[in-house]
Length: 234
Ligand SMILES: C[S@@+](CC[C@H](N)C(=O)[O-])C[C@H]1O[C@@H](n2cnc3c(N)ncnc32)[C@H](O)[C@@H]1O
Image (cartoon, rainbow, N blue to C red; front, side, top):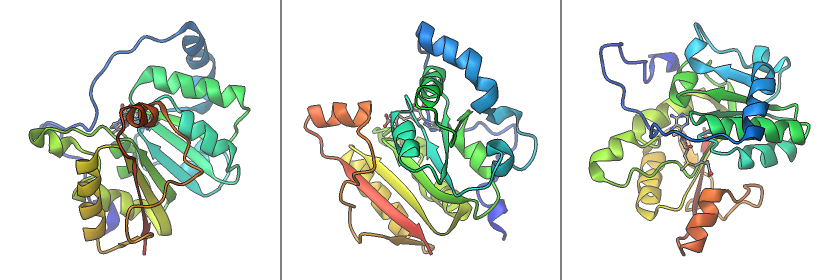
């Protein structure tokens, strides 16, 4: 079986289990303006993809690619991309105000190594060539705490196999969560994947290069510990 066959797109008649909450959000005037002016230069509509995704065409040049799944308001993406200009950062989000916010940050900081995709990150990953990602970041994914919702979690065996197949050998999958039970489940899932190596053999020390986002700040204020997990593809 080739890696492209893993986690195939379900047929249209099968209801998709989504990893995100459909939610509305109001955009500020500043975000609305950023979206209108910058989307055509920096945006990718995942639903419009009609073949394999070509990162070099999207960025206009070749560089190691970091994929961030669920970039929220884009604070971590913008800060990490600014500090790491030799890699490309592709942020994926379904929440349009967050996408607009990131576009505004991209312009404000003059970032040339960021692009923003709207839609389901798993659909985009399925369209990516095997071995095309240098890193995948999944920071504070929706925890879906109820047992009957665990099937919606982004970190589960089939999704991990898909993400790992798109990593280049030596590429990393970095997850962070403030949800202790999800952290344990992530650890179990990630260590069970024979093609992944746990870089720290335990939860990773908090990396200084991962900026504190709104979700992390909220967790820290509530006294919840943060768990980082960093796994490398063999
Ligand atoms: C709890 S928020 C965390 C946002 C951000 N990473 C942070 O730390 O502030 C999780 C985000 O992931 C997004 N998300 C969940 N599943 C997704 C998917 N399959 N594709 C794209 N975005 C997704 C949600 O829309 C939501 O904004």
